[in-house]
Amino acid sequence: MSRVRAATRLLAGLLPPFLIGAAAVFGFAPYGVWPLLLLSLALLFGLVDVAATPRKAAVIAWAWGLGYFTGTIHWIYISLHTYGGMPALLAGLAVLGLAAFLGLYPAVVAWGARRWAGTVRAALLLVALPACWLLGEWLRGWLFTGFPWASVGYSQVPSGPLAGYVPILGIYGVGGLLALLAGMLAWLVGRPLDRAAALVLGAGLLLCLVGYPLGQIEWTQASGKPLKVALLQGAIPQNRKWGMEDLLYNLDTYYRLVRDAKAELIVLPETAFPIFLHDMDQYYPDYLAAMLAMAKKQDAALIAGAPRLDAQSQRYYNGAVLLSDPRRPANYKAHLVPFGEFVPMRPLVAWIYDNILQMPLADFSSGGPVQTPLNVRDQRIAANICYEDVFGEELLPNARQATLLLNLSNLAWFDGSAALAQHGQISQARAMETGRPMLRATNSGTTAAIDAHGRYLAKLPERVEGVLYATVQGRTGETPYLRWGNVAALILAGAGLVLARWMARRH
Image (cartoon, rainbow, N blue to C red; front, side, top):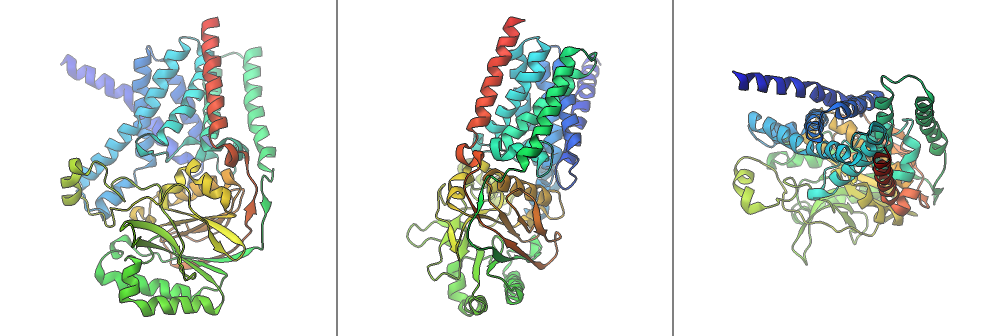
């Protein structure tokens, strides 16, 4: 009976931080209630502050992280169960398992901050926790191939009070600033409005106020003539994507959309052709010839997402191919999805992968970190595929060479979920970080044109077949983030840790 009571008390203690973390999903697109995310972080920091030991602080932060990641990436269930064929119970457990693993990052942040700052409340809330939070999210962005989805800084994109810092510090840096505001709120709770409280409150307001004029700075300059683009959205359900009986349906959909598009650049989304290009050339040569003839008639360039076999290396790539150029130059996906596009530790997971999951095209190779932009008229386009644009720093080498960014995606794997809007928000952040417009051509959404300040110029409704027209202006020059990446944010985090240690020892 005592064990039952102990377990009940443990669950009762973990439930509040779990719910607080789960509520933070409303801080991101499509909801955009960013103060709710700030409040969620402030409540977490307050709980970490009052925890009896660093270990208990870590457990509380893990429960918060379990709720947070379950809420923000719950849509993975759709790809595993609805389209991947995994039984519902296993798919649900897989999502919870991933959320539980990702929850270890805030747990380590809480434990480390408490150990580093000791019992000095100001050092913990105002310095150590914000610095460790920034480092924790940065670590999550690359460790074990990385999964930086739902970094808290995205809640500020494109018009939060801290959005102006994105071109300078990037999303991780802005996440650190948001954590600083949360720490300030937690520190101010229960304090009288004395001189110290007034200074902290004033610093928080100043931090937000400075963000606005920073957001008005034009870090980059117009380059070349504006380009009229047509972004195609086929809205093809995922269960009609890969079967041979549905191939003609896919091809017919995008043939009609290309036929009706009138622009200087026509873009088809990721795997618009759900077979390899060499098979298209062999079995459907008239189809490609007719599509290219329609584009040529109006002097339009044509970019399409298609899987491709390299004849020399015999490797497969997920690419954005400039079909209107006889040489067919391409940008290939560099950061592949584990278990979606390649199988890590295949000998260990082969049976599960081959017998439970049903994921097509899962043996791709990486195209490499630096690739040549696609030339369209006087613009240079750096294309990225699907979720690899969540890795902001990895896009910088190609963005420096380019005047426009382009994302091709097929998010029908997560159809009808918040993943579509969240991915659009991620692309908005990449535009702000690099000072480059971002074009998005997707199968089901969010298909959009985004300016260099992260604002939507035009956007199609989700899960609706159509053509989105927009005129975009390429840009050159460098934002501070495009020049130095995450270095500035990491230096600030390091300085914060030094300051927190000094405050703890001085106390």
